[in-house]
Image 1 (tube, rainbow over the protein chains, first blue to last red):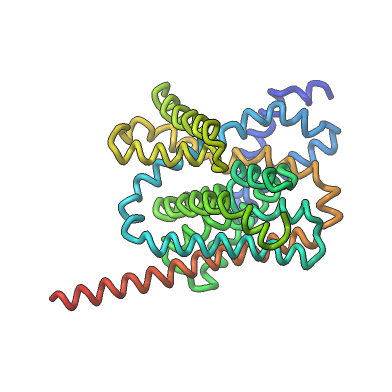
Image 2: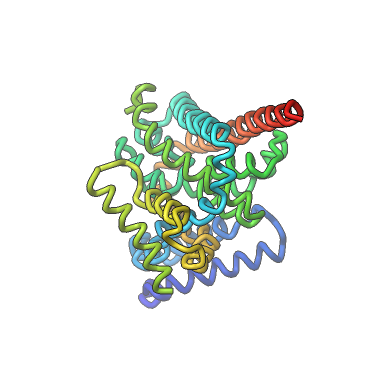
Length: 231
Length: 124
């Protein structure tokens, strides 16, 4: 048991499970078998079965999520590559992001409150659409539970990555720009990584959605929560 | 490789510095991203200086979310107690964000494109 809770062993396991999950998706072609989702599920089952705590896992795990911040900085590259195109349609982009951001904040608070969620949970849900580092900061500033937010953020990302393109098709949102923006705005970096798989243009607009909704959510959440009487 | 890491972490460090100095509520990583795009645009950094590492980081973006996702196991009790509100609010709101953003953008973009087309014919 002691060997299993070794940092390096847990890291190797994480890489191995992810690799296996990716092969499984390639082999079956099922979108639902998202490798991130499968890896998280397998690791939780493994930790529960062996009785290893999350804190022990995270001693190795933080070497992985350490790369989240530099990876978000790296999104500056596709942003730069599409700057010209973005400038040409500045108004549609800014307006749609603002609408998306407000719709997300207001709807999640209204529904959660209506269904009887506690104040902490409502606050933790509010920044769910944006990337983890932003969402956690927004959440803790407003008095929620940051790591609950982190976990929900990942679930939201998976939801967008797995079903996003299909939902957009159903709603007749067909052009790559609008699809990318929507996916990035609704499901941050996980949605963006899915959009990158589909193509460069999708990816660039998704990173734009991720950035703009992130910034707008960081700026607006405190006021929206106050206006709605939550914080 | 060292230069690539220096640029990425340098942008991130400046982001951290700005957050520390101003107490602004925007994460350092977002400031670093905007800074990197600006430096590329101003030609202070060449694209091939950061291309390799950024392709690697962006290509594996999803993987970096695994540990925060595993943290879900810590909140099984809260999630269980408020499962329905959490799931319903999250799912519906996520669909709404996706639709609201995608749909608004498509609508405004089509309008803008049509306007341009009309100008084009008028000029001819």
